[in-house]
Image (cartoon, rainbow, N blue to C red; front, side, top):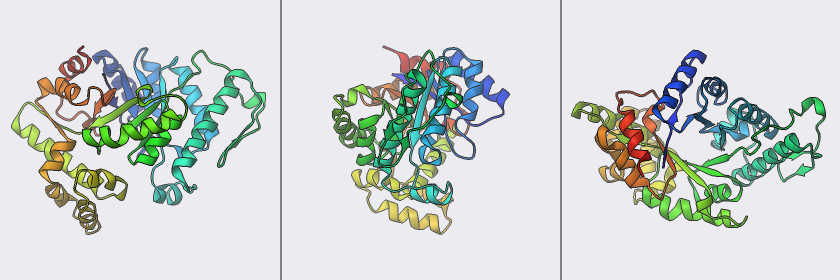
Length: 339
């Protein structure tokens, strides 16, 4: 199993320094995410400052960009990093794609599979000079000249990850992706009984199985060296889980776990602006299924025991907002990497 870290948007010098720190700790990959800032921009500085740390997006919003623009920036980052880049894509939700990005969202699973196939066709032309001839149901790539072609690179095989929660998007990932971004709003049972089987169905359409895909997830944890640290982290985790539970996109996980009514309850509290109160309404049984509870010194071993054979790589969700009070990285890395 591999241990990764999320890399928040920072000033260029801070990104470089943080990437070097992660590399020195033995972290396998640093992932950016698209929220208030662009997901790709920091990775150029991380690539320049390191030599072994993998870099990737978890996630960049696919439909916010054309396949060509995504293919182009991924090609550049793969070049700058000497083959260490991983392209992680997600679809976002209709409201944001249509009303924030002004882009179409119809048939998202079918659209994103076509998108990824188009990106790969563009890369093939970059690498081999093949005449553009891709025409799918949503996207096409049929025109280029030398002025717009960056040409071949040393590491042209760029892994593509797709994010999802529901079975249809999992199946789409199996059909076209090299890896899958598991949402932190998950349980091990949901991964085993819903996500992995759906990935396998998709993978078998191209002669592969779920074992051929790499699964990665940021994981909710409650840890710390003192009870006060653990209590503060639990409160923050409860709040974030409550926020996700208020969103219809994650209702499938709640229903699977037997908490189908929770989404409407949380949605109502969210509409009333009671975000600070929502965490207290997260049932302890659901919290225990989603969150990993462990002391700092044994967190790595606990994560590995829980996800061995289910996920291939993990990171701490808490790193989205900075490292907080967690400082036991050597023990965490050793616990994850242990044979």
